[in-house]
Amino acid sequence: MNSFEPHITVATVVEQDGRLLFVREHQDGELVLNQPAGHVEFGEDLMQAAYRETLEETAWQVEVTDLLGWYIFQPFKGAGVYYRACFVARPLKHDPRQKLDRGIEEAVWLTPQELSALQAEHRSPLVARCVSDYLSGRRLPLDSIYQHPWPLQQG
Image (cartoon, rainbow, N blue to C red; front, top):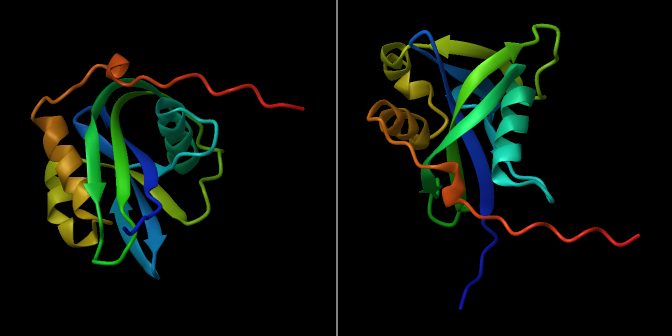
């Protein structure tokens, strides 16, 4: 039996005035578009990770309001498998002085039509799928996720 190490990631769909928040980031020497997203860190719950990644990549503080869904993606046979928990969040406050994460070129607000016209730049098919699910009205309650409390660290 083959085992593998899954990649647990989070992403957020953030809307303001009919535009959605994305990042232009470097991947394999190219600029690509993605939702604010990244890996969950040890000791972090999924919603904390979504908040942190959005803040680090866009300089926007957000309120995570809903779970959009779980998305599983393998870029090619033999590649790692990514398990993405995508959340819906509303923007609260932007800090234009905050430096963005390494690899992030800029945060951009795009209409769904603008995003669609840039499909060749999407980091993965999950970018469009998450937007499609969001626009269809999909929302799952946050309490559909249960995380048992992390044990206290022993000193």
